[in-house]
Structures are given as structure tokens and as C-alpha cells.
Amino acid sequence: MELGGVNWEILLYALMPFAAFMYAAVGHGGASSYLMILALLGFAPQEIRPSALILNVFVSLISFLNYRKAAVFPMRLFLTLVIFSVPAAYLGGRILLDTGIYKQVLGVLLLFPVLKFAGLFPVSAQPKFTQQPWMVAILGGSIGLLSGMIGIGGGIILSPILLLLGWTGVKETAAVSALFIFVNSIAGFLGASVFQVELSPQLWMLLPLTVAGGALGAYFGAKKWTPKFLTYLLAFVLAFAAVKLIFG
Image (cartoon, helix red, strand yellow):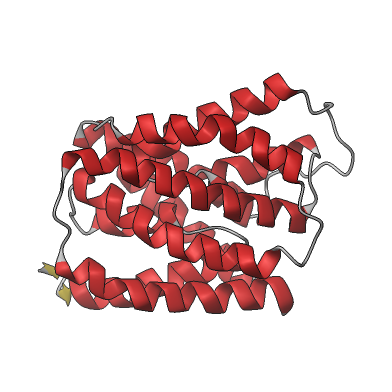
């Protein structure tokens, strides 16, 4: 398949590991970027979702293992979130959206990492609201449902909200988001597997490359540095893709 004179396989093998690197560096699995790349290259939604979720499971787990020792893990908050998000993600995975609607919703969701990577999401140093169980439950359930429908782990939505509410610091947010993504990606994949879609062999070949990119990103993000310039660049690319997906 040619895309503007460039073989799509070359684009896949270059962009997917890079996306995994960048997302894992900030405690995410990268599903939103995987979805963007696969959607723009013409893959069908029923094939995009399980592919992105499989990659998400591996990359988010690696990210969590690197971030879990960088901060105190807020276990109570995490458990309350996933108790409601996991079944919701499973149900969302069983919902197959129309291709046009799918791309528009994905385009809107891409705005979350754009704002975050561009540093435009406000971060509260003090909690704005006391953590009430019902608030955490609604947050987890709603993000889980949307995540399963689209094929993401939900970290791109959860992390800016946690920072905005002041419930967790930057390192704690990265750790919670990574593990949140991991469990929701598994639930979403199990839900989406009801459609029994056969994945392209090329996507299976991408797995080790993408996981390797995620491992490097998680290591550097948790222990070495924050790639500010590259995150701004990624924000620009995601913004461009969001506009293209929303408006066609």
C-alpha cells in the first residue's frame, strides 16, 4: 500500500515505536497514537481497536513498572477507579461504532493528549475536591466505557483530570494512569474479541518494535529526563491528525 508515494509499512515501523516511546515516557500506553496512525493509514475500526489495545497492554505495563518506584502509589484511588472502569471497558469493547463516527470521536479524544503535551492543562497543587467514592466511581466508569468503545486505555483522559483535581502529583499520576491503562486495555480487548477479527500479520510484527520503543521511553521518562521538545512536536502532530479525523 502506497501513501503519498511512501510505503505504508515503512511508516508503520517508524511511527509506532516512536509513539510508544513518547507516550511511555509520560506514563501512558500510546493507544491514541496507535489509533491515529492506523486510522490515517486506512485500517478498519474493527481491526484498529484490538490492535491498539494489544500494544497498549504491553507498553503500559512496562511504563508502570518503571514509574511505580518513582512515587508512592495511591492504591485506594486506583482500586476505586478500576472496580468501575474494568466492566465498563469490557462493555464498551462490545460496541462497534460506525467508521465515520469512530473517526470523529477519536479526533476529539486526541485533543486531550494535545493539551497535555502542550502544557495547557492546569495542574493543581492542592486538592480542589475531597475524593468521594461516588466521584471516583463515576470517573472510572465513564472513562472505562469510552475507552472500550474507542480502543484506548483511558490514561489520556484520566491523567489530566487527576492533575486538575489535585488528587495526585505528576509521578503518582503517571503510575496510576499506566496501571489503569493496562487493566482497561485487557478488558476492552476481551470485549472487542467478540467480533473475532483476524489481525494483519504486519501488526503482529510491529509488537516487538513497539514494545521496545515503549520500554526505552518508560526508562528515560521515569529515571532520566522529560523530552519537552519532542512532546511539543508530538502535540502538533496529534493536533493535525485530530483536525483531519474530525473534519475529514
